[in-house]
Every structure is written in structure tokens, then in C-alpha cells.
Image (tube, rainbow, N blue to C red; front, top):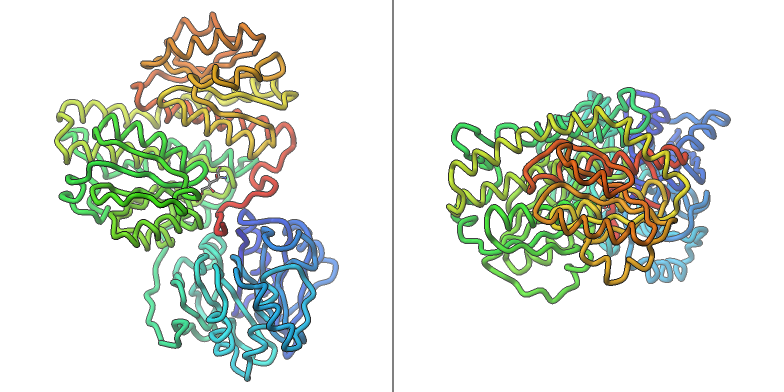
Length: 609
Ligand code: M6R
């Protein structure tokens, strides 16, 4: 949600900020702006709409300056408009702020500041910040920011500049991420590492309740209470090429095609075919602690929730412990019953999803055992959790999660096998057989991806439909949910995901010739039941497309179209069935001219509630 960027150094500030904003745009894209300090003046440019509008505006009326801050917005308070776009300023335009997050007590702060004579021009919560800083400003920006943030409640990452205390950018964090890029005589501020990669891979992550003062000759850190902090510079492994489209029309398509490699990378060094062993030494949870768990609770949002559902089948089948899967947004407010014998697993691509983090904090408060499955090292989630398992998917830029879903399923399969081994519930032979099957997944995915054109042709036949039903049973049920989510979020076509068995309890009423059904139908233990669903749909004039095994001779006789996938062990079919669903959604959205990588109303990291 929202991206903040800052630069101080010898390069052209406007170009660096613009370049950074383009790389942060996936975090929010309803308006954008920047503020540049030039001499004793601050110049602001703001536009409604995407970064390209800001770029055009800067081309037609260029600005120059010594250093500055920029912002791309995902509106929470106040509609998307130029007036509500960041940066926001104080009464005299001397203090300017960009902000990611929500100031929960902004109404009372605004009232207080208005009584003190401040005038407000926008509908945003953010506008209170520069006024609050102005109220505390006595010549030292850092000190004023420090006083201000102590009065602010909620989640925020802010960067502030002042025309009256020049040569510095002050950054503060409480919640949403903020990272400082360390260059040679130049420094960068960003909401995530992507914009920094073309300039530096040396970074410092600001922790909660910390403030950084960034000057052309160095950075200093303090806590909100004013104590100096020494921080380590981290070197990030991601490189700039990872965030290029690499010849694909959209990041999403590129990321779909990266999945075989992502799964290989996530498995790498973590399994042995010879011994049948799984190695998760880096997890940070002792074997004995895993041995004593008798239950797992998986907590996540969106696509990560769906991978959690797949994980439930993996863990219950292989490790033989019960698993509950919960929406983080619900769990955080539940009077949940703490279970000391449970492992609480939090799944998140970004590691910054506000609901997932809040649920983790609630669980931690009860002193329970926590594990984070995450794609972002040094994220809030990985920092807060006792154990961590990283998914090695590399940066995911498309707002719709694809490769991180596969990476999450990969880690969950590893974790299930690992737990099974530690608990002694899986023989060496069986373990070897499962590992062998998992190792075949990337190649099988390559086969599916080589036939992507067939899915594209199929998608073109469905362009005129406005409603879809996705059905799956057992391990394919989460894939039905995920397929429907993908279609909804990028093509704005209504889709319902349902467990096949539930169809007769309601959704069947929707079926007619205008509502096509996508059936996830690998030849597994529930195949016959899925076939019954197919007949029920056909009897009501519905069109059925099935995702089915290559060897399945039966299905084609009963459905209208078939998407073929290689055969695989029934438990691991989600690795293969998910990908045609991603492709189908992608091709429909692309053909409808939708903004695939940046769908309307969405943002990549949902750092607000
Ligand atoms: O970063 P997270 O995995 O915690 O994000 C969770 C959801 O916001 C995310 O999966 C969202 O549903 C995506 N748009 C799905 O494609």
C-alpha cells in the first residue's frame, strides 16, 4: 500500500525518484507526486493517476533540485485526486512529508492542530503529519519528527524534508517497511528494495520505532525515545535483472513462466533423494519442538491463504497432524484458544501484510510457537516470528501472486515431509518416493508452459462471459478458489470458487448456458465425485472445461474442453493444476485489455487493515 522513495546524492534527483516510483508503482497507483528541495525552497509536483502522468507533467514543466522525496498512492483516506496526492505540506510549505500507512488518531490530531491555528486542505490522514512536525519544529527537523511520531497512533513509514533545516531527509517507521540504500556518497530511501537494486545492494532496514537521518555524507539512527542505534548493513542477493520484464508483455506472464525455476530454487539443498531426508536446518525451530507439536494452525490472507489450504492436505496426509487454516483478518480478532502443542504458521509473500502481522503478534503475546513462510527476508513477519522458512521466488512484481504461490506450496511440501520424518510417521522408502515426485514437478510444469498457447486459445473462446464457476474437491478445492481469485482480480470478471460437493447446496442454481464451469479434475481419490459434478452442470446446460491428466481417456467424453497436464501423484497435483488457472486468467485479462500487473483498486502489499 503506497510506496515512498527518497534520494540524497549527486545524481539527478528527479530522475532517481521517478525511476524509484516506477518500481514501487505496484504498491499503489491512484496518484503520485514528489517534492524537491532547491536552495531554501521546496517544489512539489503531484498528479492524479499513474506514474506516467507524473512523468509527463515533469516533462512539460521540469523541476530541478538537490534532494527530495516521492510517493505513489493507494488511497485509504480521501479519494484519489491531485489534492490528496502526496507529498503533503505544513501551513507554509516549509515541511513536506510522504507517508505509507494509516494515522489512526488523525481526527483528534487534526482537531487539536486546527485549534492551534493550522489549516488543512486535503481529506487525508497524512496531512496531519507535516502540521504536527511544524508544531514541534524549533530548527531541528529530526527532533520535530521525533516529537511528532510519538503523538501518532497507527501504522506509518514517513519521510520528511524541511526548507528550514536543509541537507537531510528524516525517515521514521512504525509498522510499514522502510529501507535505506547505501551508495557511494549517496543514499536512497524506499518502501522496499526493488528500486534500490539498480544503484546498490547494500541496505539497512529500519525497525519499528526507529528514525533515520539521511545526509549526503552518512546516515544516523535513533529510536523514537532518542537513543542512538548502531545498525548493520545487509547485502541483498536479488539483482536488478530480476525486476525487468525480460521480453514478456507483463510481469505476471514472466512470473508464471518462472515457476519451474522458482520451485527448483526453493527445493535446492533442502532434500536428498539418496537418504530420503529433508533439511530445514535454517528454520530456527529445534527438532524437539517440532516433535512435540500435535497440531498446526496456518494463518494468512489471499493467495497465501490458498497455499495454506493446500498445505493442510500436505501436512495432514504426510505428517498426520491436524491442521486448521485461518484468515488472518478474522483470526486477529478471535478469542482463539491458545494451544501450547500447536505450531502457528504464518504465510505471506511480502511479510508486511497488516492482518497477518497482527495475527502473529496476537499469537506471540500468548507465548506460542510461531513459524513464518515468507518470500522477503528481513520483513516484519520474518523478524517477529520464532522460526522462518524462506520461499526462494525472487521479487514478484505483478500484483497477482503466481510464482510465490508455487514457492509457498513447495515449502509446505518440504515442511510436511520434514515433520513426518521427525515424528517418525513416514518410512524412508515412502519419503524417497515423495521426494522423487516433487523433483519431477519443475519439468512437468515446463511441459504445461510449453503448451500455454492452447490455454490462450481456450481463453479467447470465453471472453464474452461475465460469470464463472470454479469447482474442485480435496486438494483441488484450494486451486478452484485460487483460479477464481486470479480471474476476479486481474480481469474483473466475476468468478466463484467452490468445493464440488457444495455445489448442490446452492451454487447449482446459478448454472445455465451463460455461466461456464472450470473443473479441476486430476485423476485422484475424488475423481468420480468430480465427474458427478460435471454431469450435474451439463444437465443444466452449463459449459464445462476440465483440467485433467494426460492419461485420462474418460473425461473428454463428458466435458466440452480439456486442459491437459502431465500425470502426477494425487497429493501434489496442485503444483500442476494451479498453473493453467493462472494462464487462463492472464489471457482473459490481457485480451480484455485489463491492466494485468496493476489491477484497479489493488496493491501488492496490503500494509493497512
Ligand atoms: O504478501 P501476502 O502474501 O501476505 O499477501 C496476501 C494477499 O494480499 C495476496 O495474496 C493477494 O490476495 C494477491 N493479490 C493475490 O493475487
